Length: 466
Image (cartoon, rainbow, N blue to C red):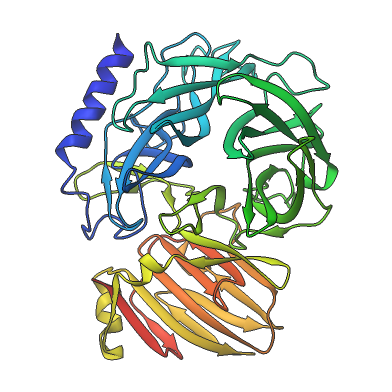
């Protein structure tokens, strides 16, 4: 009963601030964020009946990780979002401790949602939102919505893949994040898992109807960390692309050892066999980007969105606190055998050019900016204390002066080599800077705190959010 009362209060708060959360100076202007509380992985990202639906991991009661719900928002253009009521929340024995990440497909004009259902085997007596000694088990479940607006959490759920006890097939605890798609009249599901906690594992399941699933194959790779999260498999033209978030690939003693990677892949729809190379590239080289999910936009482009991890909450002027946001939507492509990520054209259409003499004023007013420039070797650009330079042919982003003196995190990151000059599209918001290099050849994004209004270095053009 207490859980339901809290949920009603959260829903009421979301309804009360629906109009206020758009474009206020104390909130992000064009990066999606939850109206209150905690946000992480995007889920169920899909274009359906004329709208983009974005669901996301959400703890609505505090700006910290807790029992996961699915928040919900809709948009007509991937830029202007409207918050809806919380869509999915725990109601069953198998999902009582969390509706973890998953995906959505359209079938028979309905939305089919797939998610990982979590149950604690031992509960922390001092915090019911945490397990004790990481003792949990995970199964896969689904819910069908007739219209993408109503979600029957009591009668509409179905457990489709029970907890897998055979360790040669999957791990009972760490098998999660179903991404489902249809190809050649069959449905396929890719799941992230681990092999004895030491080797990342990707599982493939197959279905004739999207409801009854059979195990097909697995792919294990030592170079992809110890556990795979949030796998995604899709085609760009006729080439398969794999995107995943392996855990433990950046073991340098600092936070965020888990990163998101991508690579060209091979997948046989007849046998269900997935083949991944040993090497991969980062989806984003800033280190805060995680758990991306993709789907097709209304024009058939492969568009991706991801969670930007934030180490501490931000307090709004109304006293509420929030943690986490989504990156700008990015169009996935392939160029010269490399996966590329360019900012979605809908984002650019929402900016208008301003006089360069007004840039400092806009920074002071904390207005979202789109800055374009070209840096040559040895040149630097400083935006409100955040520094960008081209050094040894690499684009380097440094947030040391705008990261609130927090320790244990990377403050400087760099891309691979791009040459003696680099074209940069820099999207600046109060708590996030995204740098697109050479039209999406690489991206480097950094969460920031305390961005100032100074500006030094070469700038060719500046646009402000309309």
